[in-house]
Length: 153
Image (cartoon, rainbow, N blue to C red; front, top):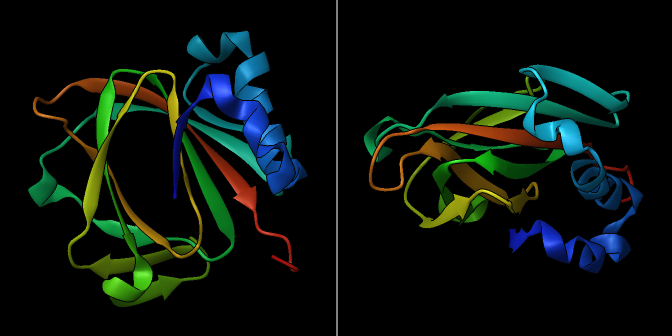
């Protein structure tokens, strides 16, 4: 897992073209703050953005998840959201849906408050629990960049 702000995006150029392209997309897409909700293809199924807006929820309603085919880069456009993170080997793994690329899990982990202008990168070994309120519920807007994992990763 990586937690950082967009101003440091150049540090991640060595992590592969798709990750750097995803961060660069957010940086160069000034309209990201006014993009409508939904999916935006950047490089087809290899790299796309999901623009989301929703109310944060209490931790009791959170669900642990991980992905096998995609890396998640979650960039906070506005508001603040608490996200859980844990290595998947420390969580009880449940059902994996290949169609949704979603591994459901249970357990406990750590938490980070992600504020506007910050992002978190979740790799396949990173279980995560997004969408939590950071003290008080609020409506947040974020962009989840889905980065297809290359076969050689």
